[in-house]
Image (tube, rainbow, N blue to C red):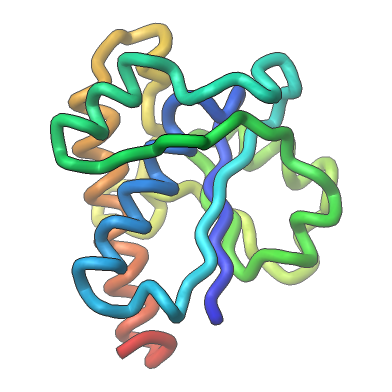
Length: 154
């Protein structure tokens, strides 16, 4: 089983969007049983809160539910638990590198797996949840393509 953790700041916008976008894609592709997918934040400030309503609405526009998801903070034990830790921006990568040292090279930005690596802007500030969705979806597809090329899935 491939274990994937998505990480953003508060775990109420980008990382839960990524979690549920990937869950939807692997379900449609017929290999959800091969994955354990979750998300967390680098900060505890939103811990216990539900997905931010505009992020939830954007997922819903695409027929994706995130019902029951509550924000949680990244724990040091998460590093050992997950095979891939996909961050939304460089700052999250730096934060997790400080915490873990990343000896197994598990940590990267989600869009580092695409042809145009970059940060995914925080829609909390930009208010552009549709762009965040589009970029996350692109990143998830590219990441899954990478796993397929490596023979990890399919």
